[in-house]
Structures are given as structure tokens and as C-alpha cells.
Amino acid sequence: MHASSRRAAAHLSRLLVATALFLTASLLAPRPVCADEAPPRKSRVEWSALWPRFHVWEYAATGVLDVANYYLYYDTVPPPQPKWRGDNVFDDTVRGWLRAETPGGRQRAARASDLLALTRYIVPFGIDLPVTLLIHRQVGVTWQLLMMDLEAFAVGGLITNLLFWKAGRDRPDGPDCAADAGYDPECTRGGNASFPSGHAQGVATAAGLTCVHHRYLPLYGSGAADGGACVLMSLAAVATGVTRIISDRHFTSDVLVGSTVGFAAGYGLPWLLHYRSPAEGESGATGRAAVVLPFAGPKTVGLSVVGGL
Image (cartoon, rainbow, N blue to C red; front, side, top):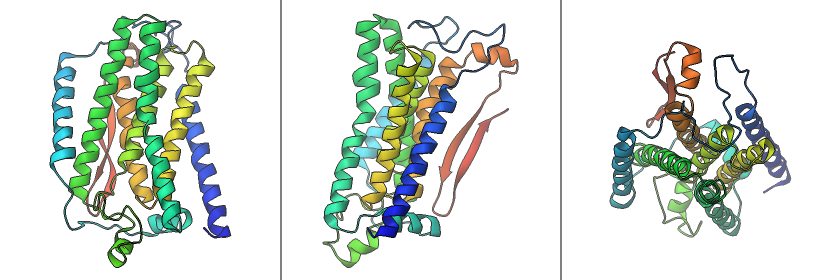
């Protein structure tokens, strides 16, 4: 990249990191506790009697969603011709700033994003579940965490796979690959599956799960350690999105929507269905809830609100 591009990329990276840190701090900040409300974070790892356990319908829904995800991912393909390219000033400008100029640079960024994508499994499944089971010896809590994790990944994955097929967005390198098949080693892989970013969605889901679990349960024994896990996974999500843009596999809007879907599923579902209810709902007195979900089409990207306030 040119010097001006490197400076712009550095500024953007710092902005993304600062945003991730700000959001993480906001999520982990202590809230005022009413006299009739239990503290949101427990002093030891145990399942509160005020938190609903995994519902029967959630078991069924998670199983159905996993089957649907398997079918969409392995038995369907994106449209052979792009339904939507989606060139716009925002995406094109950031692409110009961050895209690596050489095939080798793009390939290295793609490999880095693949490695970062593994963090989606390492912290929620490879660390937190063994810690809960083997150190805290909480079999029941371990089961609840596992099922919430699987549910969040099922919901986030289904939304992402449906959007791949529905949107059919050409990847940023599509025109370059069409003009020169040697533009990049990735030219023949995953065409018209740019929107949203599956890598960003997966790591953001893990970040949301890490943040919500560590906010309500002292899995690592201290606020600093549990908060650090949330910060670490949030930074991994930011880095994943940036490397997907550098590798020229996704537009910035693909990354932002994928990250929104992932974090909403990872943080929002456990909070809405388990940690929030009924303790926080009782203090609120209304019992109403609203969920913000992303929607997209060939010419439209936005958010929809389901529920009431």
C-alpha cells in the first residue's frame, strides 16, 4: 500500500480498536442495582434460581436450525451470476485504503483471517466450558453454557447462510478475477457469497457469548480477568473483519453486517432468554422486550425491530 493508504489504514484500525474497547467497557460496566433486584454478576459460578434454564422449545429449535444450516452450507451454492454487486462510495473507499496490492499480501491476509476464525471455538468451547466443568465443577452450568453457545451459532449461521443465497453479492475481487484469472489464488472460491462475512459473523458470535457469560458469571475469578476475555475476543472480531477486507474477500459493509448478526446472536440471545429474565424483567415491571435484527436485500440494508418497548 502507498504511504497515504497505510496512514489511512492505521487510523481506521485504531478507530476500530477504540470502538471495540468502548463497547466492551460499556457492556461490562457495573449497573445501578435496585433494592428488589439481584446483582447482575454472581460472586461464584452457579446458576441463579432467577435465570430460566434452556427451554424445551430451544432444544428443538436449535436442532432444526443446525439441520437447516448443514443443508444450506453443504447442499446449496450461491447463484452462478451475482444478484448484487453493491459498489458504493463507502465500500470502495475503505477497499482502496486497506486492500493489499499484491496476490501474496492478499493471500497472507486471508490465511490470517482463517487463523483468527478459529478463535470462535477456542474461547467459548475450548476454554470456558472446561473451566466451568473441571475447575468450578458445575455440570449444570456447563450444560447451560454449551446449549446457549450452540443456539447462538445456529441462529447466526442460519441468517448468514440465508443471506449468502438471497443476496448473491459479488465479492470485491469479482471484476478483477473476471478480467484476469491470475489476479488472486482465491478467484475460483466462493464467488457471489460476499454478503455478509461469515468469518466476521462467527468470531463476533464468540465475542458476544464471551462477553455475556463473563459479565454474569465469574468464570475466571475476577472482574479484570473476565473483562479481559471479553476485550480479547472483541479485538479478535475486529482483526478478523480487517483482514477480510485486506484480503479483498469482503466489502466493509459485509464485515459490519456479519459482525452485527454475530454479536446480536452471541450476546443478545443468552441475555434475552436467560440472564435477563425474569430478574431484570421484574424490576422493569413491563415485561416487554424488543430485539433488533438486521435485514438486507439487493438494494437495501437496514435494521428491523421485533417486539415492543
